[in-house]
Amino acid sequence: MHNKSDQALLTISELAQELGVGSHILRYWESHFPALRPLQRAGNRRYYRPDDVALAHRINHLLKNEGYTVKGAVKYLSTEGQKESPDLSTEQGSSADAEICRQWINELRSISNMLSEALTI
Image (cartoon, rainbow, N blue to C red; front, side, top):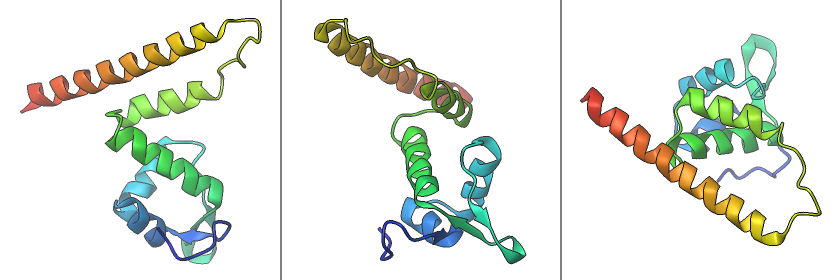
């Protein structure tokens, strides 16, 4: 984790180091994830706000831990914001069922990605 306060802006190299990716990866993500838009100052220096840092962490998690492709992560994040708020009249059990379904879907995506990678070898 960085030594700055949570509200401080991070440079591209600081965020890249925090995530364990190259700066070129962050620039690539910026071209594919419309919500990832750091401030750009003179000389095109990038400064990531706390919301940008949180999004970059989320993208990194989806790609590295959840097994999403970049295209899949873009789709997931774009539809995540469009989800309706939960209906208060539904039973709590259906919420648990929905969570189990999400876990199964994530597991199936992970298996699908592993199979796709195995076929390309």
